[in-house]
Image (cartoon, rainbow, N blue to C red; front, top):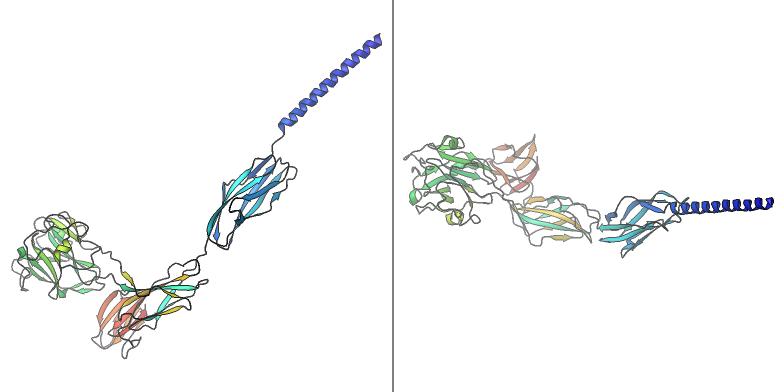
Length: 498
């Protein structure tokens, strides 16, 4: 019986141990099942892949892919309507012990044409959360280099040959030829008029002609109380001018009775006199017209010559009294029609009306007119078989300009540099005329011509830099600017570079 009891106790103890072991195994298994890490995929921290290239070229982008606790390969695929424009180099990444180390992955984009395309890149592995990236790519036609236009050749009275350099990839060129119209004014203008407190009166003339002007050719006249222009040079309302006014310069006249600060701004102070010639030219009231004459011909005016009235200007009543009038920067020439010049409002008037004794702009004038380029008949000319084009049927002694655009089947280049050329005065003019020549010596222009001939100097834009009278033998001229200069003497024209 004692042995039986021992056997029973042994069995009970063994069973308990078994139960304990089974429970332990269950606990360990459950712990193992709940703590196993999930597969993960990590991609370079970019939300989209963007690529840009020229048509027929390839764009490339690299992303970095990493995986942990993987149970299978990482796969990459591209989907979407534009997927055929994208290529993946390597479709699967194989893990080692469940891990894919940081691996660079190449994506290529190719398009034989121009356009914008999109697709979706999907990166996946069983059990891992999908990773997607938007693929965006665009391509444009490759631009052509900007061509270089070179100096014209075969210049004559009716045309010239335009020239330019070759551009790789171009199969045609558009040649744009225009007549150049300078922004220079044809003559002086009255740029300001001031009728201020008591004797504070002034006039300003402006030279925008492109060359210095001899003021002895000009006269200022006053129509006192609408009585008309004076007929005698001895009149106090008739003022002859003198001296030289440089290009883009202003000339200010005021009375000796005006304020000291106004006189400090003046180029000429007119001594007030009721009898001396010109003694009252700047002692006017708002109802006295002022006229600018050249060689006795009226070229500009302020006020009505036959009326005693303080005229309205730009819609401002009696603007000629107790106001300063400033010519707009866009006015290109004098105007002898005062009604048109004064206008009816701020838009159609040639003048800006300022308050009394406002003199901020005395002594200079703002002139902002750009030169005009008027295309000649047939421009642009398309050239497919060379690097030059003969342009004819042009006017003699006229400035023209040209530039070139290179082309292929898809794109146009940027505009080339601008070349300016002046046609000659006679059909057989070349760079040589018997007894006449021009050249540079020690940074000075030397001109050989018969004494007394007129020498005109232009820049490359056709703007006149100066007029000179030749001496016997050589005339030495210090040009006003460097670069390409055009020298004209009668029918002779040549270019020199300083």
